[in-house]
Image (cartoon, rainbow over the protein chains, first blue to last red):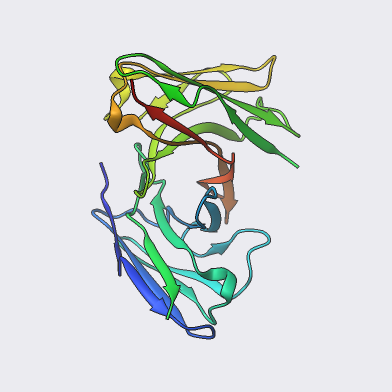
Length: 107
Length: 126
């Protein structure tokens, strides 16, 4: 199985901050990398697919980059509704696997 | 728009079989572009893919659960179902169903869980 890691595991930030979350795969996954946002008690929501494509309806302050083994999710200006946990997920091979998550909370 | 809704018992006894159904509304489960999957999340923990099914009945399972998992589809009811046998407390989790979509980018198909159900909590306890 392809192992996914994320850093940091948690971070504290203020509204308006630029936030970057890193995801690393244990082997090359090309651009088969997705990012999800999950708020407490809610299902995950797809933000980014194919490493850098913005899902319809997702604000443009979210962006993704990377290929191979190293990927980043960037929130250009953190908004109050962005405080949540973020997961990366590889769809390169079965079983698809998720990262452990990065919790973004209020500083 | 397309919606998914999980249903089933919220409490299952150890060693018994967990059974859940996902009902798809606002669209057809028989779309050729998508698989339909189950994902679970133990309390306070991360996400684990359980398995996925195509409308034709083709299935893919997580090897870590394969010996205990069966996913089936009923296209006449626009539903797909999960059975997990011999459950223990470690199977206590929120169970989500989701559409696993092929999204084309520059002619290449990328799969992602793009539509999710709200999730249902299943507790394994006597």
